[in-house]
Length: 427
Ligand code: EPU
Image (cartoon, rainbow, N blue to C red):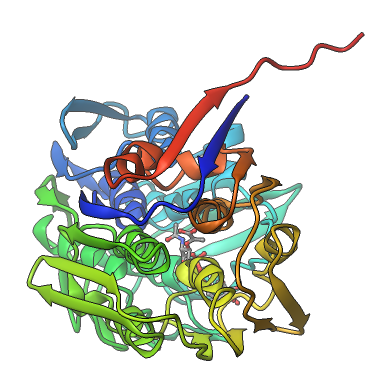
């Protein structure tokens, strides 16, 4: 059991480096199932989600080897397995990305239905709709998705649902279409930079994808894909988390390896709140100019304000004098962090898919529990500004998406440390 202890009140100063993007790395690792031959993936962060993906791939006959630094070499050693029954598949949602590549390359796939999620129901109907349109026969039984095909064929597919586009759904269908016969058009495709990164990786493997980064993807199927040497993009969500941390602690920090053009909505919001943000092609400097002003924030698919930074910006808004409204348009139930922030003295009222925040003068440190990855990041930020000591439990969530975050925040001056606690034995 591990926990993180933070003594708040230190302005973050200096510079911090952003690592590779988790949400690009995971689908790209699964995409290697599509290729014959060895791929080298660079800039892969050291996260438990990456380790778990490597374990799932091994079960599927794909070997992965860390070459040191952020590089992983990937190569299929057994092209036959079509089923992954690892407990990890159930636990890690991104493992649904094995479905499209298995179906396209091995013609059959059987994986557990991804489980529920702390922030609500996360259906995969659009993934299945897209794969069925390509000619897959799919049925869901006894908690498993079973899919098979004689040959996938290109199709015209609309991939939008009640909450807009789907990131991993677009990834899954795009990967399958890369090896389908003929032309596929995906309309209402997700435009997230991580989906674009996957498309660029597929093209490096020999796929023919056009319209990358737009709402319409055109994929001309090819006979086979080869291994590729590819460097994944840096993590914009990690960058955004550090940016908010710098602003809210009244600090002055430069986030290295951050791409400002991928963070326009976040930069806009921080400026509206009164922070000073300057940038060049691959760094962003954030300083708090004045006391934070309240603003309304609504999450949307890219290029809107990212749902993966909603919890973090909420902490900053808790300290802005006046009323702010945060509305979730991607995951209407993603508010698990609210109860923990209230425990630390925040004034937040939840109404449907919105949280109404009335700014308070300060937060106070308390023992809190992280419910998911981004909620953990939000509690870390709250701890950095709270009076006294904040103790965050269940930190394994954090290690799924942020590499050594406490060391990097300590490098900016934060008083933060990880502590290993002994499990309480039953008597
Ligand atoms: N949706 C459907 N049907 C589907 C798929 C999705 O209705 O078949 C709905 C979802 O319920 C949600 C909306 O569409 O309301 C968007 O979900 P999406 O499919 O885009 O989410 P995802 O692909 O499962 C990825 C990221 C999430 C991130 C979302 C939104 C990965 C591994 N996960 O999930 O990241 O929040 O896109 O940007 O890429 C995180 O990193 O903490 C995280 C949760």
